[in-house]
Image 1 (cartoon, rainbow, N blue to C red):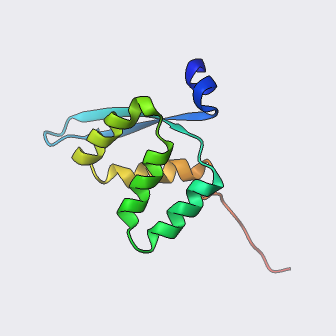
Image 2: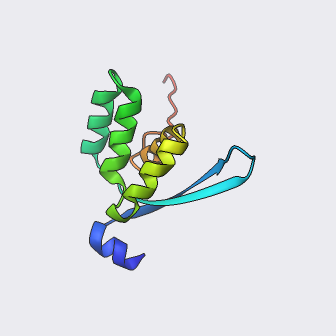
Length: 104
C-alpha cells in the first residue's frame, strides 16, 4: 500500500460485495485516488445528460492504473456497482455529510 501512496498520493481501497447469478457472494477490491473538486465538478456537469456515463467517467478518472481492467470487467458484469462505488468516493469529498439547520 505504501508504494501506491507514493505513486498516487492519497488512495482508498473499496471492497464491493456482490452476488453472482447462482447466489454466491463475490468480493471485488479496487484502489482509487482521492477525488478532487475537479472530478466532482465534471461528474455534476455530465450527470444531467448521461448519468451512467458520468459515473463511469468519474470512476475511471480515479481508479489506479493497476485496477483499471478489473474495474472494467466488473462494471460489464455488474453495471449497478457503478452507483455504489461512486457514492462511496463522494463520501471522501463530503458529499454525503450530515448537515443540520435550524431557525434562530
